[in-house]
Length: 289
Length: 306
Image 1 (spheres, rainbow over the protein chains, first blue to last red):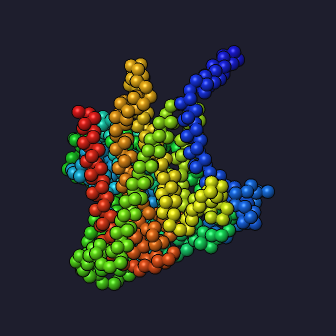
Image 2: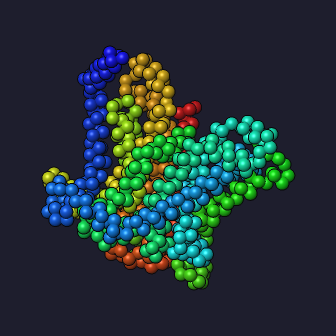
Image 3: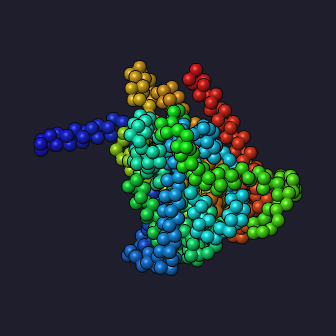
């Protein structure tokens, strides 16, 4: 056992050396990748670094390494920025809108994928053309205003319960669920509603997970609708709250950077765990054309 | 297709259950999108209960032909196109290059892939704020490096800001382009490229005659997404520099005119009919450029396959 592992390690090591030694191509590849890494990692590291500085250190030299880590920046940002309230709001918006969206989206996508409704083709096209359509901002505003939902949580959530890309992902993935299941279930006396709820939901889980994650991230990062529709500070999601915080703390970069970190951290962790779903959603279907 | 779950009344269940999703989509997205054309012919304001009057083509006339504002609008349109061309070409090429580098099985591939994709999920607010700090003018990292190189930029403070927004836009979204290319590259069977290699094709020939044609679906997707996406993009302008003369793109103009904007040097009022007309100009731009791109890509695809 030990020997095998040693051997394995040896061949691995040799392989690595060989590769590096014989291929100037790979060296060039790494040179380009490292240059890009500086551009991609640089801004992130500077933010992390700044969040641990004192204001005085930052003013003296914005790129210096802090003498000691200022964790107070984080508690100051958390308390002064009212972050717990904003985060709670964002969670409420992302949670409720995503749940409503996903349930309605599955019942919308399944009959389109199965061609169980007349005009399935037209229906699907309505979602595909969304990319090309004119911005909906103005009539949306008139709608919300006339419904009396301006500056309400309900109005804001209402604007977040739809997402054409998710429908496209769901329809495409549901096409690969075998039709025989429908027939077998129907023969056993299963109703359409129960079938979708108990058979299709679990079977389409990977695609649903993708859609859930993409939709929730989209809401967590949404800024414009929150700026247009919410004027009451108690309703602000984290994005809007962050912009307000920047307005007040714009010159206190260490505290501001700590605030950015607090806001970014949930997304980064979520991404590291759910990378697979996020990426499959963004690339799935794209390759088929 | 045959519907197995019963006939007559039961036949209506899928229609009934489809309704809520369709209703939401039509009400808050598709409907308003289409209604934009209607509002563009009115003097709608963003005030509850205010009468909405039909004004015919006045908004378009004003947007395109009347006085200094029309000249400014022409500048905004030009700037939107510059932005689109710069962002699409760089993002497309960089995304392709990185995808090619990251599908060779090099050690560290996962790390690079995760890193380059990371900004995508952070969203405009964090993307914008991180770069506001990175471009901090008083001894921030970029200004420091530029100074050492003997160069000078006003960074986000002056007219250079427009170009810096382009940089941040590409930094933020290159990951999507890269991922779509990686998925496309991974779907090319290795036998094909290996066969070409055995036949004596060098790296470049292999790419130009095998990989590139086989990558057509992802090339099409990325080009279309990049072009339309960058024509419509404006949110990073809001976070990075605000509404400032000499930097506006069309999407930001629509927002600022429609909902009022007082930050920066310009103040606008709620003029939603006019903003709707501007939205329709954006629509025309996206449609013309998007459809002609698609037409060219189709032709190319037929040539490659036929």
